[in-house]
Length: 129
Image (cartoon, rainbow, N blue to C red; front, side, top):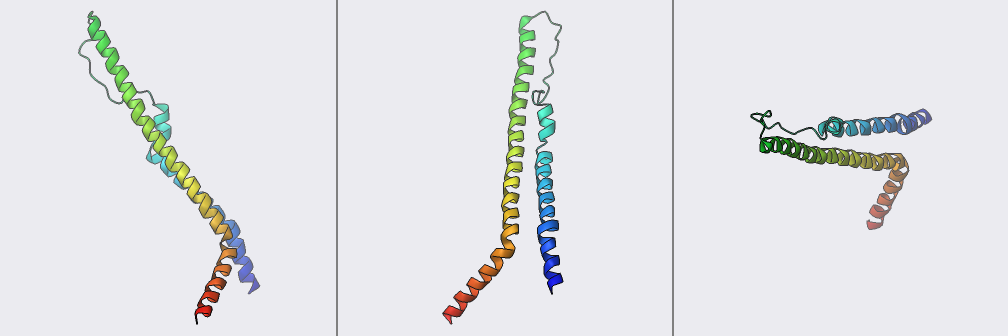
């Protein structure tokens, strides 16, 4: 009997907690990969799409300004979209870290809380009878 209790306690406080932490790491990695956080951080100011310009060798100043502004605007739009996705990835990762912190604390407290709850439930049920 005592071997079963000691094995369960050993599993509950060592192996299961390590598994919960590993699962939390997988969730954080999932959100980073889902929203491509590292890729978007590396290419934050790259153009989101390329606007073809007919002739950049043209002596016209308006053509040069149009080419510059087109590239500038696509870089700004790309940075905005990538910034939103980076923020979503970071928020998802932070939420999963917070969730798993709560789960870990509840998991650690569960063997103490469950007998107390079962006892209180029994007291309530027997007091109704």
